[in-house]
Amino acid sequence: MSSPKFSQAAEQLMQLRGLGPLAEKMGIQILELSAERAVATMPVEGNTQPLGVLHGGAHVVLGESLGSFAANVWAHPDKFAVGIEVNASHSKSVTSGTVTAVCTALNLGKTLATHEIVISDESGRRLSTVRITNFLKEKKS
Image 1 (tube, rainbow, N blue to C red):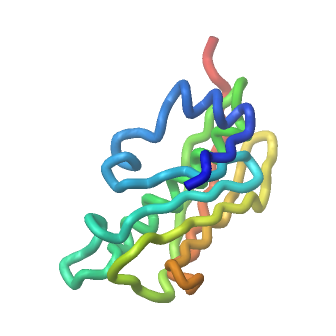
Image 2 (image 1 turned 60 degrees about the vertical axis):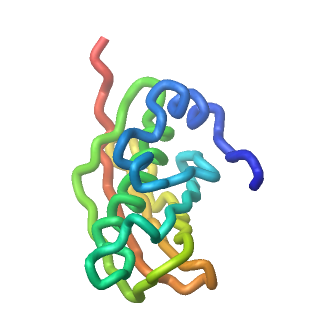
């Protein structure tokens, strides 16, 4: 496995904050991180609902985490991002393997950052589309 590809701001943020307990518990691994594009993986095992398929909430956690990380890279160093809206459309299910999320910036503004996250299975089938908008808040001195 190759080492993660992080922008300079992303590297600083990851050293400062890390992934966070929920993302770590779910096995999320960030492979690429910048404000414009981010990529992460997550195992299906351990993140399923009672029927054995990847939980819809797990899709949302992966998408929201990745979109928030990217928005925080955009906001860094003077601001920080807080999620104000997230939605997800699930189109297919998966019962095993690893899913990959690719996050793309739709808008990187002065006060808002919006990202679309496409989550796919190992054969490239789109499982979910997540969209998140983050408010960029000024850091207090």
